[in-house]
Length: 356
Image 1 (cartoon, rainbow, N blue to C red):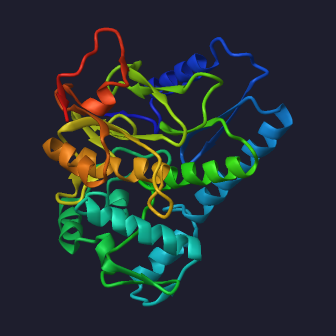
Image 2 (image 1 turned 90 degrees about the vertical axis):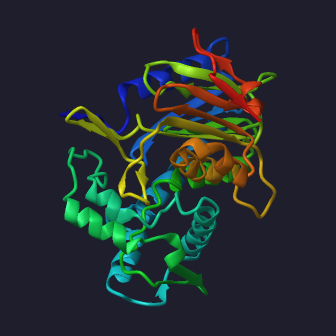
């Protein structure tokens, strides 16, 4: 039995290498970097060419916002979200929620519908049953009877009605967990705060979910895509103003038991950890006002693309995503031509298939 922490050493190494690359050749007076630990992961915010005082104040506000979001919408510690889950389980109807949570649930419901409910924040009970509702989870196989019963109840975001600041669920088995949505939402909130504070050039990294503002001087921000099985980047790519990348992988939160890998990405069709894909990375370009923003979409849309297996490209197209990469269970790399043209692959790495 092997327990893997929420962030593998390999992911930390990649993040450190990324930071080193960003700082290389830069005047330390021109770049400001702050780190924290929130959402169960390492958070890093870098700004370029802003005064120390201005950058420090802006990033401090971002980190306070991250802490607020973490506490307000935590999936298993007391929060507005857990209070809503308790009310749903009790069969209450027309449950009042904050305007922010109502908007988040409305958006998450639309994303879920686009992806055939493979991205499904209603699966909180299933996530807990597999032991992932803790920061220091213990490897466990769920009781088969309980697992079968829960799969049959089929909780989905489609069970929710959100109107006039109130939530009603037709299925008491719905238990909301915004872990596959919240980091992306936080990226977009950070972008709003930084721009309001006059920060035009920044890079926000929440455990590998990354959003760029502006540039790093006359160069784009350059970020790494983690190799799912090796402690090094699979590739690097330049990020332009307003672009975001999101990755879903079986190497981020998982445990090994009896020689099998069980990751936190659960397939709602079977109730089992997903198989067939090691990792998916998508790049989302800036979105029109009023639509799901780049950070949020990069986080949430990566889940149905990951769970879609061989249909990954179809799911990417549904979300209008042209820049995507998949590493299948055998380690073969499939990448869209749009993303392929922007990547710089690591030594000895090349894609197996390039698709339109």
